Each structure stands twice: as C-alpha cells, then as structure tokens.
Length: 165
Image (cartoon, rainbow, N blue to C red; front, side, top):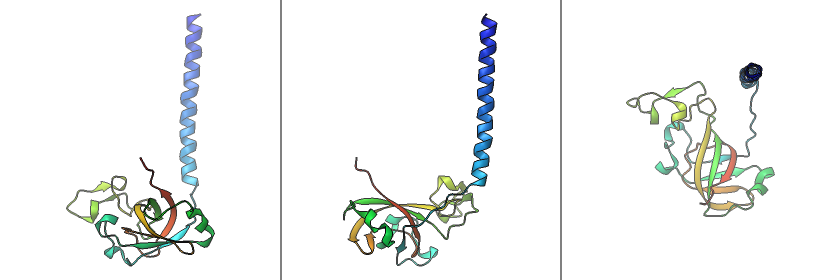
C-alpha cells in the first residue's frame, strides 16, 4: 500500500514539474510575441533641451518644469494639491534601448554595471521615475513642478501621489 502512495506522489510531483516547465516556455513565448503599448497623458515642458544639459538627478540642478497634460486627462488631476509630492513616470524617448551595461553616472572611471543597477536612461524600456513637488496647478494646462531633470517634450506616462507614512 505504501508503494502505491509513493507512486501516486511521484506521478503528481512529476506532472507539477512538467507543467511548470511548460508554463515557463509559454511565458517566454508570451514575452517574445507581445508588446506593451503606452499612450502618453502629456508632455514635459522644460528649459532643458539636450541630454548634455540635463542633470543626472532632479536634486542635482533639475529646473522647474510644466507637466502639460492632454485635455482629456486634466480631470484626473483632481485631488492633487500644491505642495504635495508626486511620482512622474516618463518615457525617456532619447534613451538607447540596446544597452545592457553602462558606466554609472556616465563616468568611464566607474566599472561597467548592468542598467538595472543604475538610473541611466539607456535601458531596454526607458521609463523615467521622478519624485517632484507640485508648485502650481493650472486646470487648463497641468502642473508646475520642481527638480525635474527631463528634457523638453519628454512624454509623460503617468502620475502617482507619494504615499504619506
């Protein structure tokens, strides 16, 4: 009787292992065949016009900038307030998508690291993450924020509030 239960357990475990392997193959196939499509909700309006002029981080000289929100999304700003911090997700449209390793902070003296260990705009999916403070709200235009290191006309993907602790 014990051998029978061991055999059943072996069959069940084997089928779980095989189905998890098949699931991995299906997931890999899914990733190879599918794309994510983003529709920008607006554009950054910034005095920064070139990558060369952009600071590495917002708190390293990022200027005030406007988050110009498309008219169809302006009502989504309801509930945000001047003085509150937000996270702005952007599409770093000038980032090179073919790089997997970079010298951190663009300094050749720094050893190469994988892009996921850095904040480089050059990455497979160049999504920017920026924590800024709302300085002004304009119901026809959007939000004026501080310390934003984005180039003028950078597409905005989303805005999220910083959660208070």
